[in-house]
Amino acid sequence: MNLRVRTRQFFAVARLTALEAVRLPTALLLILSIVGLSSLLPVLIAHKIGEGVRLVRDSALALQWVGGLLLAGFLAVSTLRRELGRGTAAGILVKPMPRALYFAAKYIGVLAPLLLYAWICGLATLLLTRAAAENYLLDWWGAAPLWLALPAALIPAALINYFTRRPYPSTALLLLALTLPLAVAVSAIGGGDPAALPWALAPTILLNAVSLAVLAALALSLAVRAEAGATLAGLGFLFLLGLVSDYMVGRHLAELPWLWPLYALIPNWQLFWTADALAVGAGIPWSYVGAVSLYAVLYLAGALSWGMVSLRNLEMN
Image (tube, rainbow, N blue to C red):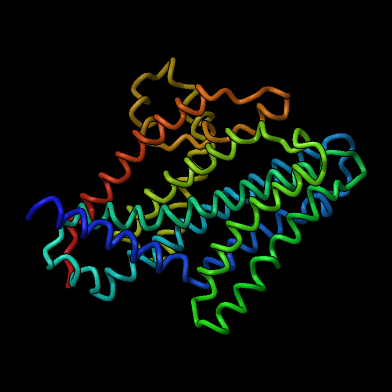
């Protein structure tokens, strides 16, 4: 079969997977919960004592990371595991479509809404970090545009759904992805000081998105064989294991070099967490972002290969 047909198959499966993912009401509720709770952090964290920016920023990034983990696991189960269980995947693969190509297309389809989530959360983090910049004060040019962007997306999405019957979750997400950049523009221009927005967060936001790409690969690879609960549990275990890998394994590499293969297999999430550097006023150089992105690409290749091998050896009804 020629390359054109394979390419058409790949993009068809990826597109349908992405559409299915953004139309899931649970995905919309999860994203809105993370963004909504993050937007309240400048108000909820009352005792700032000179560290309001750090507390709000770090809490928002941590919330978005955990939310991304849950979203990656949920989308992997909803778009791959259920297809395998219902036999839908078997119907697609008898077209014929190679299993490796099908798995890669599924990954792209799951990655698209995750990147949309990272975009939404990243812009929200810029605004709420500005909102908490002054001690004991709320910068309304940071908070108000963020709070207004949510109803500005959700209410028109409801009207569009009512009059045109377009799916509400996907419409709301797309409008939210458009209203938040407008909120950032209003905050920068209307506030009269574009430099008040923490543009130094851009590398951190990008690294968060890269980490979500790795989480998506791991979630899909787990979902090939595991049901919903086991997939989320396994993903959570890998996440916690990666957070402590430097302490548990990394510090012993000099004395025990045979631990290197184990250390390489564990995803090192600390590489993606740059909040500590921001806390001491150190900027995140783009060379570091490039190095961590290269690590993510290599780890992605391994994780996706694992998933493809698991799917190739899976018996389908």
